[in-house]
Image 1: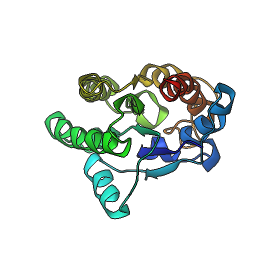
Image 2 (image 1 turned 60 degrees about the horizontal axis):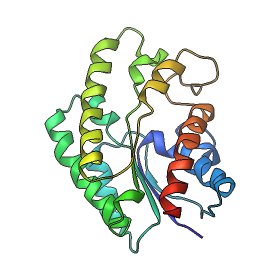
Image 3 (image 1 turned 45 degrees about the vertical axis):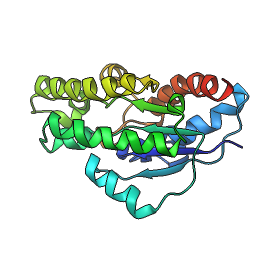
Image 4 (image 1 turned 90 degrees about the vertical axis):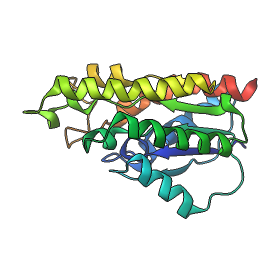
Amino acid sequence: MNSYLALGDSYTIGEMVPFRENFPNQLASMLPGWGIQMADPVIIATTGWTTDELNTAIREKHISGTFDVVTLLIGVNNQYRGRSVENYKEEFLDLLHQAITFAGGRVERVFVISIPDWGATPFADGRDRQKIATEIDAYNDVNRFYAADHNCPYLGITQSTRENAVRNGYLAEDGLHPSSMEYRIWAELLAPLVARALNA
């Protein structure tokens, strides 16, 4: 039975959707179809967390041992609070190093996921959507660069969140967070990548 650690914020814990329908749980439930048996994910994520808050939580949890799969999706709240890209670079890199350690140094089993664009959602009505998009892109340039620099697989889901933000059923009732349908897309994209890494 493979183990899975999911690190992040509201997009990982699945704000506004049933717990079993967040993307880590949907991914784990799909993997048997790829010949992979996955235990229930260990999820360290809370709505609103920034990179430093996730870092603090990891330390407080005293996580021990290694995991067969680790996902890392973090940064939207840094952007929302107006923090600099330079600050994100430093704190994201620290988190990525921790994620690699949790995977026992197996970089091919650490999956970095891009930050969704909340500026495309109804919640952002009246805000500068282009400014939000530009800042999200800058943050994603950082996490994509460091994923590549460390040979970690990277999954870009930002465009999906932009396109589906205006489609019925792809947002939760708050008009901000993804619905289980959107999370299913992420899980379906991740499943073959995870299976390939575990079978390598």
